[in-house]
Amino acid sequence: MSTTWALALHGGAGTIARTSMTAEAERAYRAALQTALEAGAEVLRRHGPALDAVEMAVRSLEDCPLFNAGRGAVFTHEGHHEMDASIMDGRTGLAGAVAGVRTVQNPIRAARLVMEHTDHVLLAYPGADELARQHNLPTQPAEYFFTQHRYDQLQEALKEGKMRLDHSEAKQPNEDPKKKMGTVGAVARDQHGHLAAATSTGGMTNKRYSRIGDSPIIGSGTWADNRTCAISCTGHGEYFLRAVVAHDIACLMEYRGLSLAEACRIVVHDKLAPVGGEGGLVAVDSAGHVALPFNSEGMYRASLTDTTPIYIGVYGDEG
Image 1 (tube, one colour):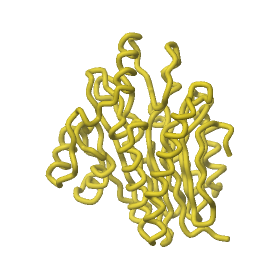
Image 2 (tube, one colour; image 1 turned 90 degrees about the horizontal axis):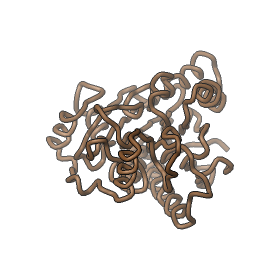
Image 3 (cartoon, one colour; image 1 turned 30 degrees about the vertical axis):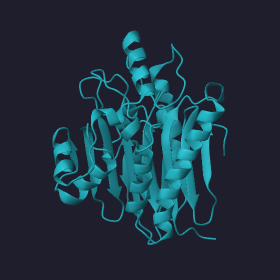
């Protein structure tokens, strides 16, 4: 039976071990992933566009304090939040992104605003926040983005004097900072055959100098093209930036005729892993095939199509 619509999403990749996850925390993560999946799937069931579906799924994840995006964003070295997001329409090739926003409740909405209401692709703070205010997007004070868990992570990182990438629950005192990657994202194929992708992140715990990773960069963290695939990445952003991961997968499909699964395998496992580029991605192709590859210990992930049941995974040995 052919698939008419498909949706996949992620909530970050990295060291996600059963030994460090309480049963209560795991249930909370799985429930949040399912809520976001249903938010996007409802759009697709009603014959809505893939662009709306990925936005709705990512907005749900941004509103959940468990994930490093929106309300659950990590703290910078200076003790505030700098959030990045991007979105791309596979039908038109248009894209929008924001970097370093501080007050926008849902950065993914600001990214779509850039795509649909400006002549630009990427806007940064403070201009991106000002555009959001001008278009009456919901904004929030700093207190809205505060979570004790993220604040404690900043204090730990400051004490250790080094940056951390983060997304998950319990943190060990001497973990490699590259073991914790936090981003949320979604990809979809709608019933009209159109693809879309969206990605959002709070960045890196204790980051300095307005550092920006791959999440708001079209071609690295996000890509969508009806001819090939839609991709949303999560991982150590510097590696994903240098490898232009999302676009590289699309190119392998377009120029070499590879399947979605094979193109993802080559980039995630053969290209990224050997150089230390830890993380993963979610992907869907023009036929509705879904791929959820990662080379880390785990990745918060979920998928659903009109012909397959809900799948939710956390650890590396699931599915």
